[in-house]
Length: 429
Image (cartoon, rainbow, N blue to C red):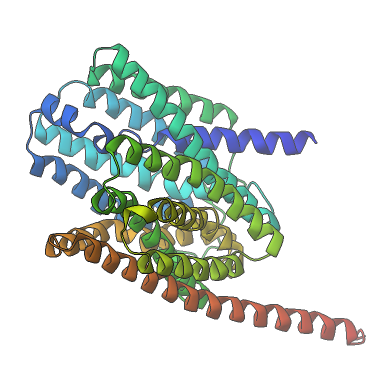
């Protein structure tokens, strides 16, 4: 019982960090105009900050996995949070555009390179293989809930300070440092790290870790499955604008629907997806069925005409589709135990999977923007092209999950047969 309580406490501490870690780098998504005016920079420069951060993140996922294999997450997670907060104080000091670029470059280091793979590795070690779905589902739900709480408190402080963005930045920066210190106090030492270095055979090298990951067929199947699932998650951001553009939904109602989709639906989907994985006994099987359900719901969304009388039906389908799409976030990392990758290379595997999974951030919304711009006189058609692309992603994901699931079942049969053969063989003198 005491061990179980300690595990949930550790998960809560990890969720505290996960709930705050990306708030500052992505703050312009919520306070764009205020930040632009305060920094005195152009729209293009605002975009450049996020582009630099996003591109460097891809490198961070890759090399961060290698770092996580060599340095304990007890050191990496707290240091990442504290340094992100320190950079936040600089961010609040009215920096120049050049300084803003430097801050975002360094944030790519502290929020991805030294944080993400280490955090994922720490979560994985909280449960046995059969508990991974529940653990990762609760992790994603915890991140969402705490991010919502931190954001709500931040908005209250911003309003109380007379819309002073610097007051908000200082509040968040202090919070980063405090949570970093709490993480240092409560997180245990990584069992697979000694004196800051992974336990390795004398012949091990960086290349051997990468090679061990790349040669696994399951790595490629899972990586492209995660690509499809995450691309659907990013694409779902265009569902609420579909309502405002085609059904004349008021901005306030659209914001409410967006909040429900982003926080409420995501929370339910993350937890639900994780528990379904543990119930079915396979994250890949769960993803397979989830992709199929997404295909069906998106097809319904395409077939329903954009008529005002059908608004509530469309909202229902949008929320249902969002539920199953968000569930992927609580599922795909739970597939890690299915990879035949030694634990000492798991950080490398997590980082490389992160590169494959999150690359849609770099281009998919730009593609959708071009589609909508090209269909400015036929807005409904533009959005339905987007839903068609989402169906294609879900179908590809289903095919990959089907292959991976079949391969994994065959592997289990072979292992089971091998064990029975070993039992049947008489002992040799």
